[in-house]
Structure formats: structure tokens, C-alpha cells
Image (cartoon, rainbow over all chains, first blue to last red; front, side, top):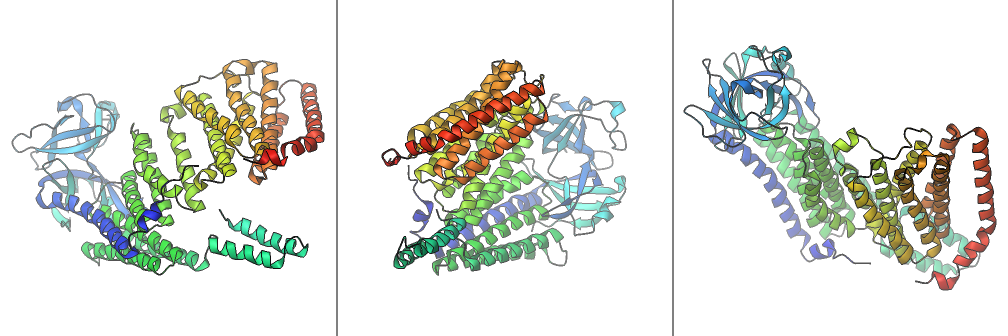
Length: 207
Length: 429
């Protein structure tokens, strides 16, 4: 039988103290790197105002959260510039610009990163589904109007709240809720503020 | 390998042998001393410590999930990082003091706190529920702890997390999930192979089985074809062959853990194949797809290897024959032969013969789980055949009569057969 070189014989040459320190540095480093990657977006990203509506469940390890369904989550391809055929799980770049009410509206959806026009921001997302029902003026899905829309996830869909407080956001009417997201130059987005009726309810500091 | 049940049996045997005057009491004492030096078995303080560590890690996890507003997020993050550092520091300290079990428990606790830390960061920045991504990060941290602090608990977490990650990505339809799985799994497999921990071995064997199970892709499960069953049968035969060979050659321990899972797969797939002959529609030949050839290309050499390389022939030969017959069953279906009455009888007889072959191998090699697996296969097969008859009840009666007479004939020759196989010159390597 072939004898594999034993990992434990290899690590046995270094004292447990140094190995312990190395493990602590590596594991804490992994968590801090994860923190910094998100904090960087919040510190220096461009702000975009997004209209949204709440839904709700619970994550076993992270507690209560509200699922947010954005106006720009459903994209009617017939009304947008850019590419027309997409597949599930594809990375897409969505060009958004503030509408008359200041809230972001999608202008185009592209498979390759487009150049942002004046006043526009490019957000990176992933195609969650294709052939979705288009949204009506209120933002509700309307399958009678056609199934030519795609659904895009931007990594902004979960909002974690203290235990038991999810209801307050959940029962808020669709038109009163607003999210301000920070978007980095690479297109990564992070939730920065939650507003109800234009008033600040939750502020997300970088740390 | 010293498992707890072996120790118990040996202790009982030692007492009996001393009582019967087979060995002297001082020899028994020498054997006991030698066993104590080899270690193994479980150590109670380490086990209780492990349970304590698991509870503490669960407490941290629930604390994170509560998302308590009174404490600022940075303070929570610092608390988790300090908890992580403390657990890993205690592990290193316990190891330098010689308490390997305690060190393992503390390192496992530290790994779970790391998992809670990943969840906390996800909560702090409202990261969307991408649980496979989180599982990969936890697998990475767990492998680091398993390697640096020699923790078997962390290794189990690493293998499970890597499996969850690859499984999750597979479910999302990521085409490269199968190749990517090996990235964290290969180092974990190396660590598992060089450890003497049965739980680690079994978890690694199951993760590998899971990899084989997801290889056909989701569409294969939606559009079910019996080629899939043949693939499962071949993979099971491969696992049984590898496990049996390792058991016969005295290692590696990781491979011996393949045996029970392979046997379970073998019993399940053979019985489904048997049930197929009862329905004329199901007995029609399915299609062999590329994975069937792949699995057979792995299984056939492994089975031949068992017959050629095993030290104990009276164990290896009946087993290899039974496995080859198992691999023949799907071929019979593909040839279209199973639709006719004669083909159905051959399939039924083949599966009963496989069961008997496994029982003989188990008895010959003194491997109880093989005997149990063979008997289980035999019993379920009989029930399936009685449940719905292939031809008329009279045909069925004749089939059982011939089978029964054949078995009784084998049994009466068995003593001579076993005596011939167990000659000492043949048992030598």
C-alpha cells in the first residue's frame, strides 16, 4: 500500500504556539478581509436611490431579515437598450439614472460593462430568471402584459433586522419604502440607508 | 485500527482464554498494556469538552442571529474575533500540554465560531442569502484549522461545508461545480487519509459518494433513465471493491470506510433492478450514457484487483464474483433480454446468487457487515419476488424449489469447500 506523507508529521515540526497564532491570524484575516470588501463600497461608492417593496422570512444563522424586491429587479427588455437575450446565472450590467422623482430607473441592460452616460450609474447583477412577467405601473407582476422580462439580483435583496422587528418594515406600504445603495466603480452594490416616507430609519456605517 | 467494539470483544476473549488456560494471565496483561499504548477508543473528558465547545459555538451563533441592537456591530465583531482567537489559543495550549482530545474540541469550537463570524459579517452588510458562498468560506477556514491545529472536528466541518458548497452550486446549475469541488476537497481528503479517525473517514467517503451522485447533472434526474441506476450500481461496486481490498490488505483506513456505503448502494440498486422485471414496461432496455462507461471502467478493474491482489482468497474470490455478477445485471437489461421470461429468471437467479456470494465472502473473511448485507439483499429479493409473480404461481414455486435445492446442495459441500480454501499455504500472501 502506498503511504501518503502525513500532514500531522509535517506540522509536528512547528510548535503548537506558532501554529495556533498562524491559525488565529488567517481566520481573523479572512473575516476582516470580508468586512473591508464591503466597507470599501459603503465609504466611497456612488449613491443611488432605489424604490423597493418588502417580503419576509428568517435565516437560521443570521436571524430575521426582510427580502426587498426593487423596481429595477424586474427589467422589461422591450423598453431597455443593450442586449436582448439572457440566460439564468449570467452576470449583467444595468445602467440606471434618476427619474423625475429622484428614484433610479433602469436605462439599459448589458452583458459587457457599458460606459456610464452623464448622471448614470452602472450596477452589476446576476440574472435570477428569464421569461418573467413584466411589472405594471405599481411594480406588481402582470403576466397578462407579457412574459418578456428578466429578474436580476443585485446582492441588495436581504435586509437584516433585530429579532422581531421585521414586521414594521414588512407592513410598510410599497411606495413609502426607499433604499439608498452605494455602488463601487466596479459595479458592486451595498445597502447604505433605509428610508420610510423620505425619513432616515436605518443608517449603515462602514463598520 | 482499534474500534471500541473490537476492544470490548478482545477484553471478553482475553478473560475467556485465560480461563480456558489458552494463554497465561501475564500474556493477557502484556496484550492489554500494548493496546493501551496504541491509544484509540474515546476519551471521556475530551468528549464532554467537545459537547461543551459545541454548546458555546451554538450560543455565539444564536447571539449573532438575534441581531441585538444594544451592542454596536463593531463590538459584536470584536467579540466574535476574540472568541475565535481564545478557542484556537486554548487548542494550541492544550496540544502543547499533550491533551490532543481537548485540543481537538477547542479547535472545533473555534471553527464553528468562525462560521458564526462569517454569518455576522453577512448580517452587518446585508449580504444576500448565498449559503453556498458562505459554506465555501467556512470550508476554507476549517481546512486551515484542521491542518495547523491537527483537528479532526474541523476536518469534518471542512468536508461537510465543501460538500454543501459544491451541492449548492450544482443546484444553481453552475456547470463547473464538479471540478471546483476538488479544490477544497483534495487537501481535506489528504488530511483525512493520514488521520486515524473513523468519523472523518466516513464523512469523506460520503462526500465522495455525493460527488459521484451529482455527476450525471440535474437533467438526468428529471428525465430518469435506468442508465442512472446502472451508474449507481457500478459506483457502489467500485466502493465495495476498494473498501474490501483495503480491509484485506490492512489499510488505508480511509478506504475501509467505503465498504458499508458501497454495500448499502449495492443492495438498493440491485433490488430496484429486480423490481424492474415485474413490470413489462420497466423491463425494457434503457440507454447507456457516457457515465455508465466511465463507472464501469473504474469498477471492473477494481473488482479484478480485489480477486488478484487480496491476501485472503476465500474472502476475495466470492466477493469479486458477486460484484462481477452485479455489473452483469444492467448489461442483461441493455441487451433487451430481460423482457423475455427466460431473461427474467436469469436476472432473479443472478441477484440471489450475488446475495449468496456476498454472504460466503463475509463468512469466509469474518466480515460481519458483508454477511449482513448479503442476507439483507437475499431477504428483500425474496419478498420482491413473492410480492408479484413473474409467471404463474406454479412457475414461481418451481423457481424457489430449484433455488432452495441448489442452496442446500451448496451448504452440504460448504465444509469441504471452506476446508480447501483455508489451507494455510494458500492463506499466505
